[in-house]
Structures are given as C-alpha cells and as structure tokens.
Length: 397
Image 1: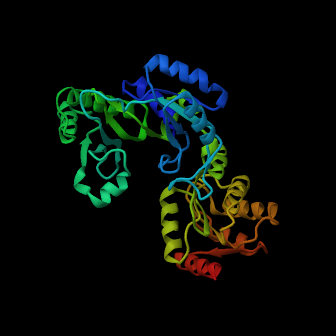
Image 2 (image 1 turned 120 degrees about the vertical axis):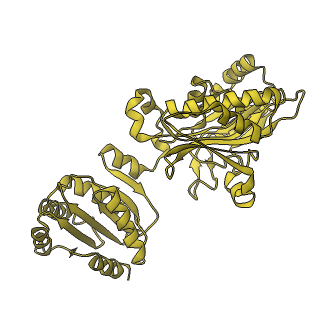
Image 3 (image 1 turned 45 degrees about the vertical axis):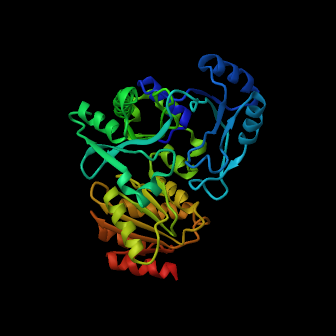
C-alpha cells in the first residue's frame, strides 16, 4: 500500500524521525489558517507547496513550488490543486492533484552549508536481510546515479534477527562524509529510520533528499513509504491511510472480492491458481510471442461466481486478445472448475468477444476436458503446455 508524502512523514515522526514539518490541504480556503499556524510553529519565512500524488518526479512536472510570501503561496496552491500533474511515473494523461502539502522552508542560511543525501530501507530478498541503500547524491534520480556513477551508492545489510548495530549506523554517517554534530545526528536518524521501517511493517522506505541543514540537523525533506499489505491486519489504523483514488481501479475491485490481481500492459489475460503457476504461465505467454495483461491468482476456489468475477476483471482491458485459464486441480477438482467456467461463460456470453483457452490438470482433469469440449461454447481446451502455446499463437494472429 503506497502512502502520500504527508502520511509517510506522520508515521516517521511518530517513530522519532526528524521531518520537514507541514500540513496537508485539500481546499484553497484553508491556506491562510495553515500558513499562519505553520509560521507560528516553525518560524519559517518561506513555504513549500507540494502536490500529493502517488508518483515521483513531482518537481519536474511543476508539482513543487517555493512561495516567498502569502500571495505566492495562494497562487501556487491554486495552480497545483486540481491540476493534471504529469511526471515520468504517471500515466500519459497525468494524475489529478486533490491534496497539497504546505511545508516549512528548511534550506535556511546558517553557520555551514546544507547537503542532500539519499537513504532508503528495503528488503533484499536474495539475502533475506534488510538493506540500507544510501548515497551522497541526494535530491536527484537514484536510477541515474546507479547507471552513471554506481561507486557513489553504498549498501549496508542488516540481519533482522539481530537488528541494526551501532557500528553500521556509524558507517553510514562516515561514508556520507559527515563529522561533528551532523555525524551524530545522522547516526540517530538512521536508527530511527530503521525502527520506523520495522515497526510499520514497511516494504520500502525512501527518503530523497535527507537534508543536512546549515545548522547540522538531519531531517527527511521528502518521504516515500510502501506498507506491506500482508501486515495491515496488525495495524488497524493503517487501513484509513489507503487512497483508492490513487490506485488502479481494477486492482481495487479485485481486492474487495478477495482476488490477487496485478494489472500489466500485455494482450493475453491470465487466470491461474497459485503464484508459482501464475509466474510460469506468464513466462509461457512471453515465449509464445504474447505479453501477459495481468497477474490473477484465483486461489483454491474457482466456482462459477469467482470465475465470472475474474473474467469481468480481465475483460475490462481493451488490449486483451485472449484469456488463458491455467488451473492445477489439487485441492479443487478440475471438473468443478470446468463447470464453473462454462456457467460463467453462459452468464456473460455477450461480453466475451475473445477466445477463452483452458488448461485443467490434476484431479478429474479428463472429466473436465469432456465438459469443456462438449459445452458448445467458444472455449478451447488444452492438455499440455505445447497445446497452450499453439492456442496463444493462434489468438495473436
């Protein structure tokens, strides 16, 4: 589950991570009160206006502005609220900005120069450890840093059974070239960031930039946080943080009916039971010259109602040229799945304009094939992967 910047900063602050202070605004009439409150709380002279959408690169698209006075603040807020913001991470048409964050200015002058860093915390699945990735090149696309100057990116891996060790946090501060108060503050910052990552059951926590202010404070100026959906049950209040208007509507619909669905950009719809078989099916589609249009795991239940819901989800995509059903009948019997597919097809016959290719293997697979073949519907059965390949190629012609 992706969070907005203002939500991520609230969770970080609750876990002791110093952040750039600000307030979310969704109505232009709230600007005056927000500006006055922020000025009293922080003594800031300037204000930063940030569009709140689930996408990076907001500044490049005109979604981040620095206002030097109240007039500019109102002008920038009015122009950003309601705009269709386009960034490298949004759809071509952009995303509608419904909320903005008005934040304090943290780039004030002081006894030393400010510096920007990049820090992220994520899971390294290949080592089953938590990885802290960091760089002196903050405030820019980390992808370009990795491509052009990979030696400027550092990694620290943390054994989750032990936790972050003091020497590891000190190593991060040292590699970032810090000393004195800024060094000590960065060590504390890294510890707090790791604590927030673990306590919130996050799958990604990215701070870009982490700012060393001119008076040697270390604060999170921006924040991207992705929470693990599988751990939401442990945080009842986190459910209220989901912004479904920022999410794929088909994926949202699938989640409400208990289906695991991920929208992709291909032309062959997939309905499979089991994540492993789903991944193998997607590979098969690519080897056959197609591209998977989705990842859809129907789980251990594939009755008529569930199959019909799955078909409806897949067929909402106009790019789909065929639907591939690949089910292994272990717990669920193949003949029951076949009956479910036939019944679902009849219920929505007018909506189905593409071939349905079905492979059912496992318990009662022979009976299942007979049901499909004798249905009189445009459902094509396959018994082997080579049969599936041939059917996919036919559908793509």
